[in-house]
Length: 150
Image (cartoon, rainbow, N blue to C red; front, side):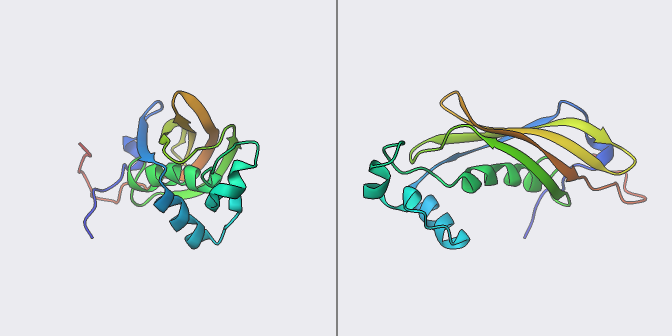
């Protein structure tokens, strides 16, 4: 499988950002339920969800937050990075049909340890669904590698 290499630690700078957008669909929520084993009816049963405070089905919070993992593993820092920790606050749910955008921003860089702190959030229709921060281990440049990421 081909992929673009991630950013090496020395290529990162405070303020760098990346984002990923996804539509919350019935198929995606049901697939996440099967993969995670979380069949809470508020996620998978329209009749049940209609009787809750939300009035309709909501996406799993972990599903929405997984967009953040996709950024860290694919884009910033990208392949070779290791997701170490995440502190999230779930503010609002994502509903089927929502277009959710996850955003990650480099907040701090520890050149000695290779650890970076990222500020993260997920938004839909201008509202913050999730906000938090995470720790990521960024790959260090292999000795002799002089390539630069475009």
